[in-house]
Length: 274
Ligand SMILES: [Fe+2]
Ligand SMILES: [Fe+2]
Image 1 (cartoon, rainbow, N blue to C red):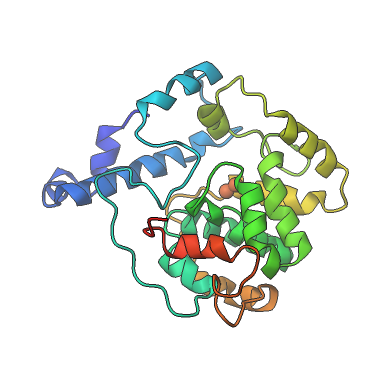
Image 2 (image 1 turned 180 degrees about the horizontal axis):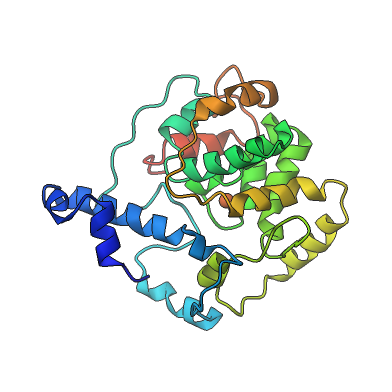
């Protein structure tokens, strides 16, 4: 991605302000700026532009140019320098604690998505699904719909986990009536000639006929337009919905012996060597 130097310096308060920062702070603001550029309306379908997108073969050729793998794990790697020591988790962690102490990368995107769902009057289950839909990417990106649904299944309604699981497949298929177009972002990430694998195609065909199709579809609708620079909704906005729709285990997430407790422990303690 090319950097618009003038816009970058202007957004940081000018060259003078930037020169006062240490290199770590500069790396932070640069990354933030690049993320914001990536999330501007130009990346949203229907907003025009003649962009050149990579092919699947070009995306493939990038694999051996990176020190990390694109799909597996955010908590375990660092895009610059060494990782930071994480703050300790409380003895009995709640979903709110994970949002505040561990979901650093996905938090704002998910809050923006839930905020849009709430503003457009969607059901509490849709708002919750939007709030949770990508948080599992803190530990796993590949097949994140399935991983995310598994992580939340013991604690939310079936409809919510359905929406989380299948938003992953529906992202590859436009639904004009619902207001979802194939995102330019995926042409960039997967290659412009990308064809989703067979299991995604079959899942789409199944979900399309399902009574809860719109539950998963609405996650994708809110997902796409959730990339709003400068919009930072607060978690407090959703506390009541979480309270009514998320079955917080009294022992704390990770301590309740549920079939997915290990996933929460992984998010809690990513520095554990084994
Ligand atoms: Fe997603
Ligand atoms: Fe998302």
